[in-house]
Length: 193
Image 1 (cartoon, rainbow, N blue to C red):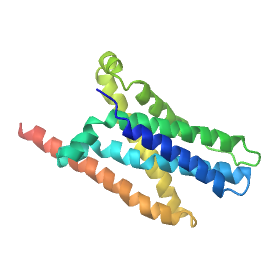
Image 2: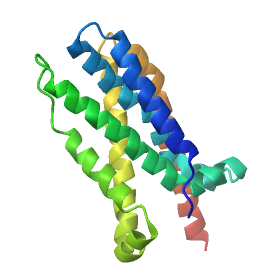
Image 3: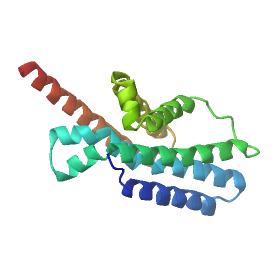
Image 4: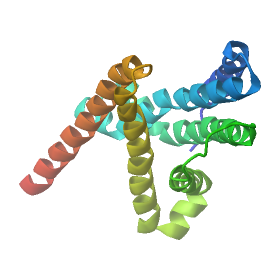
C-alpha cells in the first residue's frame, strides 16, 4: 500500500506553525515552552478524529471520501506519530525549563502505543504479528483516543481552558458515537448471517 504525502505535509506544516506560534506568543522561555507543548498537542487532534473514525465512517456511509479515509489510515497514523514526536520534543523542552512544574509520567503509555503502532505499520509486521497486529492497533487507537478525550475533558474544569474543552469534547464524543454505531451495525450484520 502506497503512503499518501498529504497527511505528512499537514503534519510537518502544522507542527512547524505550532512551534512558531508558541515561540511568538510566549513572553519568556518557560511560557514559550508551555505554549509549544499545548499547540503541538492540538495539531494531532484532526488526525486522531480521522484515524479513529475512518473505518467506521466507511462502514456507515460508504462513498468516495470515506473510502479514501479507510484506505489511507496508515498514512494518517504515521503522520500522527510524526506530530506527536514533535509534541514529545516540546514536552521535553518544557520539562527542561527552569521553574517548570513536575509533569505526570502517565503519557508514557500513550507514546509506547503510538510508536509500537508506527513501527508495526508495514506489511512485514502485519504478516509476522498476525492477529496480534490487529489487537495492538485496536487497543492502541483506543488508548490514544482516551488520552485526547481525558485531556480535553479535564479542560472543562479549568476556567481559562473551558471554552476549548467545550468546543472539542463534543467532537470527540461524536467520534465515539460513530464508532459505536459502526460496531452495532457490524454486530447486527454478523447475527443475521
